[in-house]
Image 1: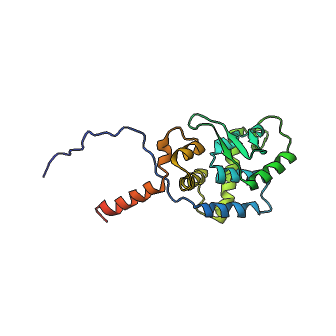
Image 2 (image 1 turned 120 degrees about the vertical axis):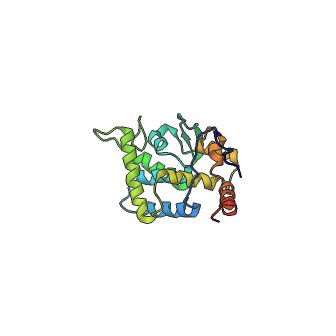
Image 3 (image 1 turned 135 degrees about the vertical axis):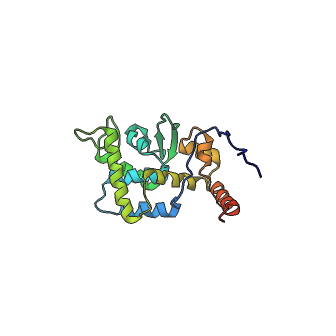
Length: 204
């Protein structure tokens, strides 16, 4: 029996990353979106916003920075600007999103400024988009209590993509700068970790 700890003084380089958990399935997100769209008291901008979370896996910040010129409805695409932590990319729009966006653009004349941020006196754009998303999530939790954050929706989308596309494609679609950010969403890795936990955990 050793009296010292052989792992003492060992430090692992790198950033600690939390593994995504309690993710929604593709069918659950589709049902959530379909139910939300038919609510009579939900305005069109909120429906569009949810579609961008569910189909393109955008962050709140990315949704808040979208402009009308980022849309290519005739090509069925949308341009997502890069930032400090994410790369720019082009993403495909679903047919139902294009219909809503066409109606929204027709009803609102956009010459400049953000697309979905409501311009209210005394509120900055960032503060306003955060509040709009918070209100939308509150409505969504009435349908599914598991919808806790916008990040959970994004994580669910990325995990779903990994079942359809290869790792590099998903890295591009998610805007991840490093492939390691994408790899942590791989369902097979999560399954391996769960199996290893069952096999090696002392209480197992």
